[in-house]
Length: 160
Image (cartoon, rainbow, N blue to C red):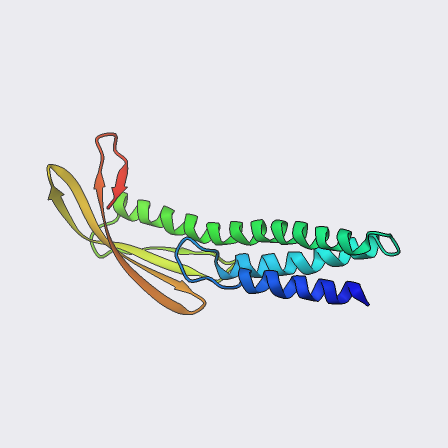
């Protein structure tokens, strides 16, 4: 049977590229899972629909590609939700929090969470700045980062 072999080969090739994530600008685990799940479901649905067609294999490949794209986008939005919650907590901590008073966030959909707290307020080149610590818990692992943000003339914060 050509179709299962073609589908399996495509699945393995695309998933081997998709599941590796090492850099901060690359996709996260939810995005990779979304991609693979979309590939499987898209390929299955289109294969069932095109069964008996002269171009069944071609249609199945198109379903795999479309499913991978849609699954990737859904997974990416879940990763972006974590980033959005962390960013909001950071801005709130910079704006309202006293030193060492944490602002926390939690995404119940992913189980990821974090906290941000300013460590000190300083003056840098005439600009008020705040140094802060951010702790993020992803899949039970705590990652800690340190940062500095300075207030712009328009009142916004510029992360440095």
